[in-house]
Amino acid sequence: MPIQVNLDVMLARRKVKSKDLAAHIGITEANLSLLKSGKVKGVRFETLAKICAYLDCQPGDILEFLPDEDD
Amino acid sequence: MTIHPRFIRLSLLLKHVITLSLILLPTLFAALWWQFDWLAANAPELNRLAVDAQSVGPGRRVLGFLISMLPVSLLLYGLWRLREAFERFSQGEFFTYETITCIRSFALMVMLQSLMRPVATTLLSVLLTMSNPPGQRTLAISIGSGELEMLFVGAVFFAVAHLMVEGRRLADDNAQII
Image (cartoon, rainbow over all chains, first blue to last red; front, side, top):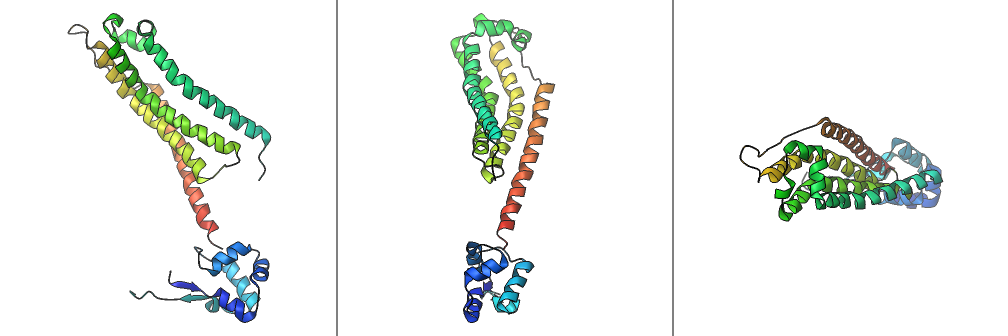
């Protein structure tokens, strides 16, 4: 998957607990954990907007495109 | 989601009815072929073929039973899958992938058995009249409105179940988008 999720990095930088972010977005901690590990098929704009608002960051701080070596 | 107790009772009742059918259907067929003289005299299909019951020996009776079981066994498998669906309904599993595929299998088997029935009838006509004198041997091919109705009903069930499978797949996909 060439999209890397750097949510855990942003959480550490902002010193925010996963539990608090999950509560703010309105998703379960289990789902947030899946999101952090990139084991989801997609992220809704609505979810992304809430994360960015809570962590005071841009989508690019959370998601990163890592091209495959073949590309 | 809470399941209405009446629905659980209905699902369990239907499950037991299907279980009973699964036992009775092959038993009834075996009993009818066991009493082949009575069957030859009373079954309209066999009457039309002018089957001489005395000339049909035990070997051909067993073969006849097996041929007649070809469409029935498909239906039995379909009923077995439908039974599984009702069992899952009674446990509160409504739109799970497994439950829907059970209904789809049932629909597929209803369709297949309606296609297999004319084949079995043709094979039976050859088997039961092969010892008749020349000129009285029959190769009967018949497709009745009953088979077509079953095919249509099966096709409708299959299409609906297939849509439900696709819906389930979409819902699963959607669940993986956070």
